[in-house]
Amino acid sequence: MTFEEWMRAVLDRVETALDHYLPAQSIEPAQLHEAMRYAVMGGGKRVRPLLCHAAGELTGAQAASVEAASAALEMIHVYSLVHDDMPCMDDDALRRGKPTVHVKYDEATALLVGDALQSQAFVALTADVLAPAQQAALVRELALASGSVGMAGGQAIDLASVGHTLTRPQLETMHRKKTGALLRAAVRMGALAGTAPDAAAMNALDAYAAAVGLAFQVVDDILDVTTDSATLGKTAGKDAKDGKPTYVSIIGLDASRALAAQLRADAHAALAPFGARAQRLAELADLVVNRVS
Image (cartoon, rainbow, N blue to C red):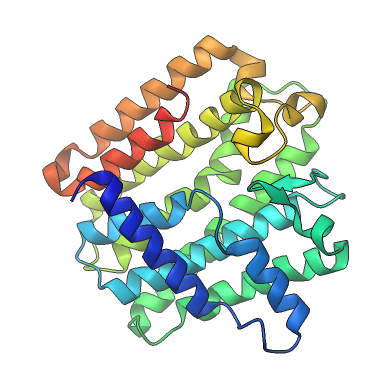
């Protein structure tokens, strides 16, 4: 199976899992469930589920287990996007090529969609397809990655940094929380959904995830200044307009491209102990960085 064929097959499984774990639109409150599905279904790159599936293959995870984990990850990710787009945060009108949830519905609905998706993620993780010990491990991973020491904390730093100049280490700290924490969790959760790796293997996966997570954000910063809104699926140039510190604003476009390439090499190097078994993870690192090639 080629990488493209593998990716299409995984994405089909992810859509099926999300459809299964999200409440049906016909269940009351119908509009809330409709809005949750509007936010989640049929859009996005699904990078976190792809990483989860690739890591799960590395440790022999059962299909149903990694599908539950990947659905939970995507729900948390989408909840963060819905809240991030609201007027009290980034105030954006476009996401994944369509109106944001607060524009399509209203602000109160968008707030509730995010709240409900966060809760629904943990419903998926406690499905009976995962053994109790796995449920506990995966719940902890996702909670830590999405809370104040992870994604939410990174967003708080991001909001506080508008209009300020950050050093490169400060910017990296922000992005390792805001973007990197959930990407790291995707790799760890996929691995833990199978036969739990030993400490050395988990350290190698952490090093890989750290490189990919930072590369993802560096590439996003590059695309924000080099790509139009239609291609990007969200409002291009908004970071600069809003005075947000980015890798491009701090180190420049060429240096940002070079950094993305170096992080790609770091990701590949981290996978060396696994050999050919980590092929899909290596290809995903290429996918993340090649968006600006």
